[in-house]
Amino acid sequence: MSKVFNKIINGNCLEELKKIPDKTFDLVFADPPYNMQIGETLTRPDASKVNGVDDKWDQFKSFKHYDDFCKSWLIECRRILKDNGSIWVIGSYHNIFRLGYHLQNLNYWLLNDVIWRKNNPMPNFRGTRFTNAHETLIWASKNKKSKYTFNYQSLKCLNDDLQMRSDWMLPICNGKERLKKNGKKIHSTQKPEALLHRIILATTNKGDTIFDPFLGTGTTAVVAKKLGRNYYGIEKDKKYFKAAQDRINKAKKIEDNYLDTIENNKSKPRIPFGSLVELGILKPGTTLFDHKKKINAKIMADGSIKHKESEGSIHKVAAKIMGTESYNGWTYWHCNINGSTVLIDNLRQKFISSKQI
Image (cartoon, rainbow, N blue to C red; front, side, top):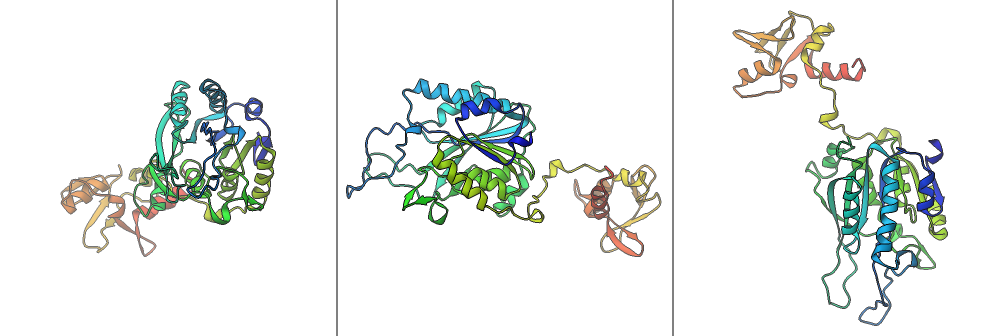
């Protein structure tokens, strides 16, 4: 397994994929040829040439050839995904609908389509169509029952405490990030690191392994390395491969202390208040009180609490006192520990951190 960690291969992905063991990767990010079918040179109004995607690797004899190619690598990617893994594929209107069709037919389970809206797209110079200002990503799990990773809280934090939507405004790869040689772009479709940062942060955890079958100049591997993930990539073109190697070698991993993500509430262990009583962390007869120390309750042997005529769970009694249908007792009740006032939720967190569960 370690042979495919933090390594890139110069080769044909359809051949190299067959060498990878089953259920190896936590995530696949695939940026395949788009099959854009550009049949003639594109020019600007001043007659200068537009550096569009006219590379040979993006040209296929027919839609059938393209479909056969896509099905081949998608089948292999599903095989090498772990059961709880997921895949991202990116494309334009030229190919994304075909990719979605194949994903469903191959029993991937579609989770989201995401619109990457570019805030600096290339204009439509001829004025014959709308400016093509976005690309589409499809996110899918290996199957319907996969317990895939989605770091909801981290994405919410990244978005100023708002739920992350499925339309992302991000710039195209430009400026210092864009790899060039003698003033010319090394790769015609280099993806921005910001895009991969969001994808990897959202759908993997520190230490996971990410695979890219069309590595290009190495954006996926670079961001994976920075974020403390393992990577493995395949790139057929020697020029792109060399650029990726150089770029990965220069990339620096973020310190481990800064790679932790906010834990999703659903993934946190659920600790009943009664467990603290059973384990002797809080004993029957102990007094609980509110933050003003004006309201008291006693802990009973079964983990319930009693306040005057009210008895029940820490939540039920707190709700009755507050006059609401429900209330979080963990954040309402306090206790005295060695002369200090302690919120009982802090005791719970300390218990969880001690790994007694």
